[in-house]
Image (cartoon, rainbow, N blue to C red; front, side, top):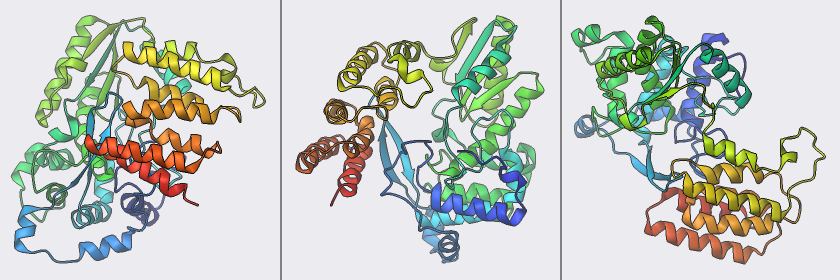
Length: 422
């Protein structure tokens, strides 16, 4: 939930301390999803407070370490198609230096993180985080899309190829003070150059690519892409960006192509390139949801869409039928997180008898799709299943995912086992 006041309306001292706590206690490890996080709750940095960060940042470094930087621990998060997304757990010393510097210079940095084009940017959230990858409210999104698309014949969608791994660290300083000024002022002690150097230190002092998952990396990306956003707006395009995904409605096909040319040219200034496979010009009218979502929602029992709390909950048979239908759609739509979305829709609307049967269905699917394992936790909590059988199932998942080096497929079962120990 977003706190309505926002960072900008707090006094400077409160704002900076809130930022500091968010960077250290809440958004240090990858934890940016709005519901089920990338890491299970047992892996957190809640005790890594600003005070700990200050003490760690003050420790000296050897000459060798200062030049080589620090390595990251890779956390392989499984996606809906079972491909890895490599998230990074940054070394505490390197992260302390970067987080402290962002905090100390936030008055200079913040103006470059508030692009009106960007949907996801540093903002206050009631759980203490400042970066949360929550999708827009469906009604708000539909209203925005209908408003922006009126009178437009084409919709352009595009994203940056391999975005975080393509970030050129020197481009962070370019985003803060301009390309020419940064190139002509390369003293290591300049505040904008220190953002660059501390960011590099987080990943072996490399200039290409930044760690994926921490809020510091998202802030660095916003600094750079905010410059691109400004040029697109200046050219008259009403464009929105969700991290590295761009959306723009255009009046003509020619204007749509001109937008893509400008976007590609501006991104190239900061060493980015467009993902050609995901760049599309879609003739309007077209639905504002993917076809698989529309199809799936059409098969959801209609009473789940009603606002009355006393509507009958789903039976095991209804839930399993819906999940089975999702399996069919999943085979037809390999590029969508169909099963995750389907289970998310029904898991909190089951009657008292359904969780055990649905657990068995989700357990079987979790063997093939580890991204579903977190939902087992909620189903276990709603049932009275034998704990020995549950532990046996979870151990089997751990062994299988160890073979494939799936970090989430190992950590989530361990978390569920620990949580349910009595």
